[in-house]
Length: 89
Image (cartoon, rainbow, N blue to C red; front, side):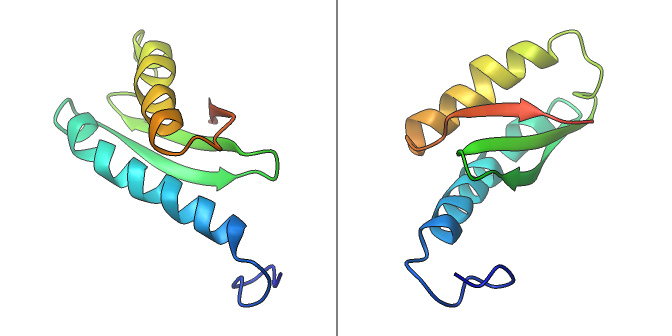
């Protein structure tokens, strides 16, 4: 598969990343309603999703709960291939 655009091959990686992106986009309004946000950084080869919390979510004492019980739980429900969600700085 072409690293740059995914124009050849099965397209599974691109498909997975698009699925993850779509779910994150659907979660963003709820986070934004509380002054926060989330940015998709990458979907790794082992299906680990890396995100960056922003706004009020960044540094919030409840951020770990938001990540594991919110973002990760919903992503795993909607995209079962996701292994885990990790916050990066």
